[in-house]
Image (tube, rainbow, N blue to C red; front, side):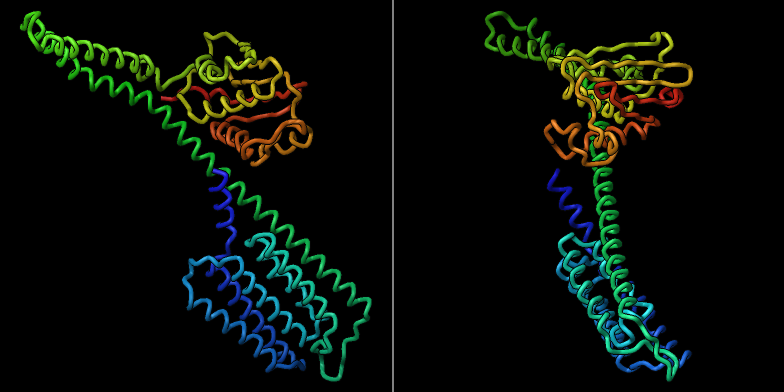
Length: 426
């Protein structure tokens, strides 16, 4: 599963061809319009033909990219780095001949870096950041003046240019880091939610097995009874010395064995479809606690409200898995005891799970609910992907629950529902 998720994250961080093509056409149009307005409408002097050559180069490469590859094609990191690097160099060249850092469009050199940070692996983005730093530095030494009114030059003090260089460099670095973190966390959250869906589907399939067992027992009951009846009649017809006597007795014994197996299947499925569909609060607690007993940890259930008024709800695979995961986590970190307190009123249902372990570390307590948090405390050994608590929290919240985490002094997790969310609705 870890390999699948890593591959999914890597695939999701590949830049799609259509996305890059559209952004580039937007850049081509913006550059062309800006140059024509400056040269034509404002009448400022600038190397017009040289600017148009740079813009045409970007348009030509973009047209080749659009017509040579399908729109859904995702660029490999190396190819995307080459394309974004070209964009950065083309923009730098255009700015270089139109005033360098004194050009008000100079901060646009950060755009290719931001795109790379949002869609590329880290090492490729860092490479583009390094290239952008060189480009920004080159712009500071541009000998071309800023296009302005004829006969008027715009003086720029070296200290001011240094300040602009620093501002653009810091903007590029900050924007790149921010977009990378946002993109990475969004990808992790997407994969974690996908894992949650898989777990929920698995729990739902397991819950459906009870019903399938009952249906199988019911469907097989009639033909098996016929086989048993015929075998018994054959046993009455043949004598003790008949050569088929032992075979008939074996047939009778095996048919009885099949009936015993079907009775056990019926018992497992509770033999009652309505009972499979509905589950009382106390039965729910017993069902999620049962697999975690006999592991050397004493699990105590404290019922603070009478059973006579407990809610009766539909069996929910998400709630069963979520509570089971929280209890398993408490058992893993408890020293000797896990206490589960159950309380219900006319308005709400509350289940609290508390262990006598070390509790949550302060930094972990602040991050609970995020995927890939793998340790409860600095002393605990990391294990798995750190998705268990995230999946449990997500599934429980989907059922309408609110969850709180605290230390009291061990870890304490309380799950609260509005009672109407736990009651079965016809």
